[in-house]
Image (cartoon, rainbow, N blue to C red; front, side, top):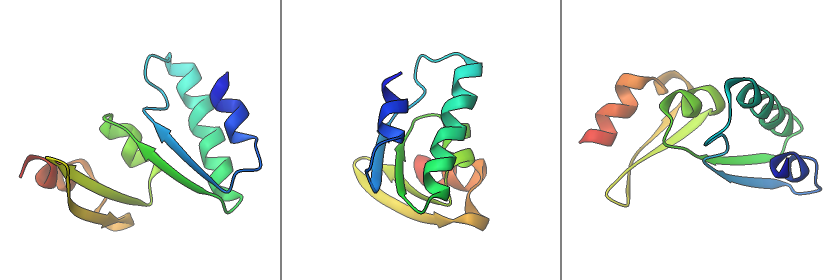
Length: 90
């Protein structure tokens, strides 16, 4: 799996665009665990995803975008479906 190679590289920052698109549920969990391990090693991870559950699961900060502009940057306590959708919908 290509993502596994990137997660085990010497990179200090990883940018993942739709990291689990088209992947079955079991593989998603494996990918999430690897992403979390990468972050626990003190490395940076930027996840771009249209899957709300994925964003909430993997993030400690979320930049909500609408029409190409950042509408809000949310921290741990504000990362929930209601708040994200509020800013995403306008």
